[in-house]
Image: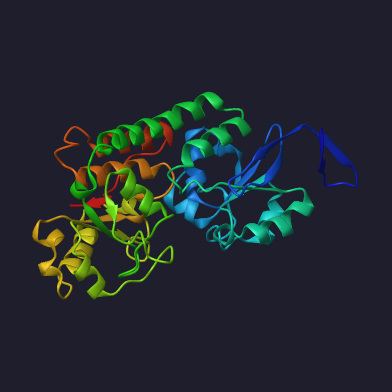
Length: 334
């Protein structure tokens, strides 16, 4: 039995139970959870899949953008997880605020400001491939939606397992070497990042895996010297404000790809010569969307091994059957 600070001077008793979040903290949450504020779309996707979006009283701009129109009528609580609106969250008084762990999710500041007021802070790092099924089940348990959570987690695990099993026997010398560029030019991702996990699960070798920082900036000469087999570029929100869901044709993605192909020295790269340069919208990365990004990566890396794997119907199933949204948009090119 716990206590919830009410609007009056009395403490209102409530049932609680304890979960361990992705920062390793023990978080005592009320049962039932009556209201939530969600600061990142990875958790927003899970809440939609669980049919729990009606519990959300506050959402960040990033959640609203990726999952439009699911949270159009919900109060805004900041731009994204590392830029929350503390005053608005306090005004809304949700039972639980969901964010990322560490500075990415303003964890320390949220805990120090909100927990003394009885607002719990739950850190879910559902952008990490290996944590997504666990976080789905944790939210399912917390919200009393275990059956739906198991269905969603299995959808994800089955896809990942299928791909990992097929590439598991590939010798290192036959694995494709991948340069994955982020939203900023010549900024890539090393070991311990979402991109690295996708490349590895799809059977590729991340050329930046040994770089000393998580998101290193590399030189044009570095890329030319590495001579990747496959190049993937993430197109950010500065180019695609509404993400791939906001596109009706591949034109903007095609323009980004053409700019890549025209970079000095790139005409001599193996990936360019063999037409293995791809671009992907930012909203196909993170959360459950990673299952689809992983399918695309597997097809791009080993087309003969994954001839039967079509990402599009899987993406449609994810968006329509789990998130309850209309499937639309263009997310990759070519």
